[in-house]
Image 1 (cartoon, helix red, strand yellow):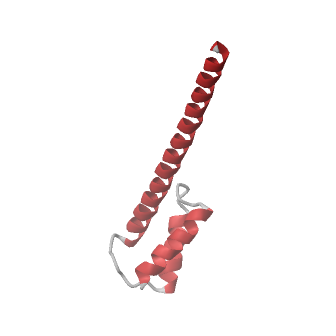
Image 2 (cartoon, one colour; image 1 turned 90 degrees about the horizontal axis):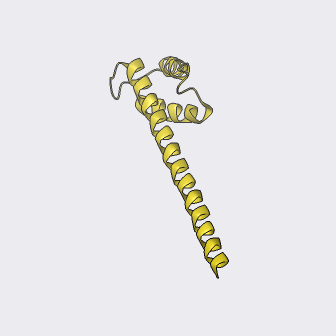
Length: 92
């Protein structure tokens, strides 16, 4: 009987630890993604001078992408598509 109680306590402890790790992982991933988005927005804002809805030529869009992607904090493959979408949307 006592062994069964110890086994239950151990299983509850292990399950709690696993759930804690999962929750912390999701939280850290979310914070990292939000940081990347904030860095991307800041970079585009710095490059464009904060002028919303400005018409950009194809050369200006290319230049903007190059300048933003040279920033090591945001220069990742996953962010490239997001940058492209944002810049193209801003140029419309």
